[in-house]
Structures are given as C-alpha cells and as structure tokens.
Image (spheres, helix red, strand yellow):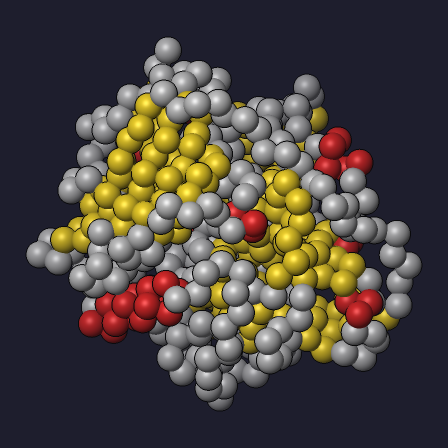
Amino acid sequence: MLTRRNMLRATTAAGVLAAVPAGVVVGSRSGTARAAESPFTTPLKVPTPIRPVRLADHDFYRLTTREADVTVLPGTTTRIRSFNGTMSPLIVARRGRPVVIEQINRLNVPFSMHLHGGHTPGSSDGHPKYQVNPGDQRIFRYPNAQDAATLWIHDHTHHEHAENVYRGLAATYLVTDEFEESLPLPKGQYDVPLQLRDAEFEENGALVWDMHDFEGRHTVLVNGRPRPYFEVAARKYRLRLINTSNERLFLLQLGEGEGEEFTHIATDGGLLPAPVTTRLLQLWPGERHEIVVDFARYGVGRKLVLNNTYPYEGEAPGVMRFDVVREAADPSSVPSKLRPVPDFGTSQVEREFTMSFNPKTGEHLINNKPFDVDRVDIRPKLGVTETWKITNADTQYGIPHSMHPHLNAFKILDRNGKPPAAGEAGLKDTISVLAGESARIQLRFTDYEGLYMYHCHLLGHLQMGMMGQMDITR
Ligand SMILES: [Cu+2]
C-alpha cells in the first residue's frame, strides 16, 4: 500500500528526475542536518574477502544466514540478519573458476539466495521453488563464465526478500578477469567496494521495519557503517558503488557546489566501452556504478563529502567523507577505451512490459498481473535475441519503477526513443524507468534453460507483485 507520504515522495522524485537527463548537474537540494547523529565520525569498513573453506577445481564457501548482534550506531547494538555474522561481506571470484556455496539457513524465516548479475543455472538462481527453509541447506553453483563485473548476493524469498535485504542480507560479489587485470586501473587497496543503503533505527539501535513507510530511513550506511569517513591517499581510487537499498535512489555528487569531476568506468555488467567524465551519478536500487576518483587533485588535508543531492525531507545529504591524509605513488591510469559491448545481432522477438500500480489492491503489476508462481509469463528460446519495451504507466501517482531480468545482461537501445547516455552504454542488468517514460532493451538468451524471474528492483514493489516468470527452452 502506498502511504500518502511516500506517494508524494514518488511524485516528486519522478518530477525532478524527468527534468534531469543523466549526466546533467542539478543543484544540491537543501537538507537539514540531523541532530541525533554526527556524520563522518565512524571509519569506513573496507571488507576483506571471505576465505573459501576448501579449494578444489572450484572455490568452496559456506554461507550461513543467521541473526547476529552488531554495532552499527556507536554505543548501541543492532540485531541483523547476516551472512556469517557480518554486514556487507565480500566474495571475490575469478572468471572461469567456479564458486560453490553451501548455504545453511539458521534464520527463522525462509531464504533464497540470488546472485544479482550472475549468469547462473536456474537451480542456483534463487527461484521461489528452491527457497531454503529454516534449518535446511542448499548448494549453489556459480560458474563465473562471464566478464569481470561487480555483482551482489541478496535474498529473493517470495514475500520475505524486502525485509531480509533491509535487515542485512546483502553481500558483494566481484568477478575478476585477465582482461580487466591487464588494464592499468587502480588495484588492490585502491579498489574499494561501497555498498550504499539506508535504514531507520530506534534509539536503542534496533532496526525499524515498515515496508510501506521508507522515508524515515535517514541513516545512510556504507558497508554497514553510518555516514562514515574514509582516509585516502592523494592518488586515484576505483570505487564500486552498489545500491542495496529497498527503495532509495542516490543522486551522487562529490564535493560542494556543482561538484567535482570523476570518471565513470563501469556499470552493472562491467566496464563501459569508454570512460565518461561526469559530476553526477544516478544509482537506483540494485544498480552498480564504478568510478575512478583522483584525490591527487586535492592534496593532503582536503576533505570531500560524497553527497546525495536528492535526500528525503529533513535528511542530511552527506553519504560519506573522503579525507586525504597521505601521499602515495600512483602508477594507475584510466585507458581511453575499456571494453566493447558485445553484438547481440538482430532481435527476432519483441515484447512489451507495462508497469502499473493498482490503488484498490495496493499491488504493483506487470502487464496488469501480479506475480503468480504457478504462471509462466513468457517463453524465450535459447540463442534468440529479444527486444523488450518497458513502459512505466504510473503517471497518476508518478511512481518510478525498474526492470531486472535475471540471467542475461542487456543493452539499452533507447529511452523515449533517444539513445542512452554514455554512462548507460555498457552492459546493464537493471534499468530505471520513470513514470510516463519507456525504454527498450536488447538481450540474448544463452546457456541455461529453465525458470527465471524478471522484476522491478524497488523491493516494496516486487513484494507487492511486480514480477514475472520466464521459462527458457531450446
Ligand atoms: Cu517498481
């Protein structure tokens, strides 16, 4: 159900964003600092990769989902739903080397693990029919036969995922490959994943959960830390931004005024064809953008805030602060060409998906239907290229939506008939579509048959029905 508050919010978001083509700077909206918490007092946590429990012809991990008590806000304890007891853990995989995960569910709710952006067999994709009940376990196989990219693991349990993700079940999963390693991009300690999300807390540190009322989530977390600071060297860093929020859009800008320039190098499916210099990024739920920031421009002593220029009413815009504290050698650079986008050929099938909201039932619909696990909506064929036209028909309430087909990354052909901005010219797996707008994407079905889902990645919408099911066959 849409509350009055978030309905108004959605209307405003669409109105503002419709006027802002990707890559164009908007002035910072005013935000009031929250007295309850001082920003930039907690250090950023940079995750170290989880160690496999066993190495064979694959890397074998054990991921236990369980409740854990962690410190998020200083001086308090927060009960979260976690992988192995931590927030925002990291797995690093290598192209061509499979990862096998034994997932043990010690929660008192079902769990269904989905590797977002993964080209994986249907039995390992988190489909509701394979969800793992409390006390059970399941083996997931990720072949990693795909290009280097920033992926993430999250829950996909039907009717539970929004709360499970909100309570902490989000892990970063990097696929690396030789091609990317051959490029002179920043590496090692200068390559940092940043999971961005919001949350609302009680005074005692407990998480506040209300799927339909998300505008009170005024605490922005980066890798599980509230509006942290990060001490950096005066050199280039690669920052992998992942939006693991349920509903929140981040409109990111670095520094004050019109913002500092940075270089956009990658998105959901990995490297862009060419780097893009910009001052503003739209990061929608589920999306990833990677940027290179050169802190040598500012010198030791400078402090730069990464701002969300579209905060909720009464919320501070600061997401995190970079404090330049030392000099360092910098052999890295951003090449003028990165990775070409593959050619999917000519589309043989065209489909249309219309996203809408039913105010009578509170359901979010695709082609006028809420998700039904017993219904197959489309039947794509292996080896066939399709064009999907996605239309957001929610003009009455101005609700933004997105589309995330599982299994295959796609290319954006156009938005409202116009070619995508340079920052959307790479392979994507999640596309936002504002109210009254449409976009066309092209995707090719490869390698795996079976049941997969496609859905809006605003998790409240997904939970309220905005999902379809495809059965891919030969
Ligand atoms: Cu939606």
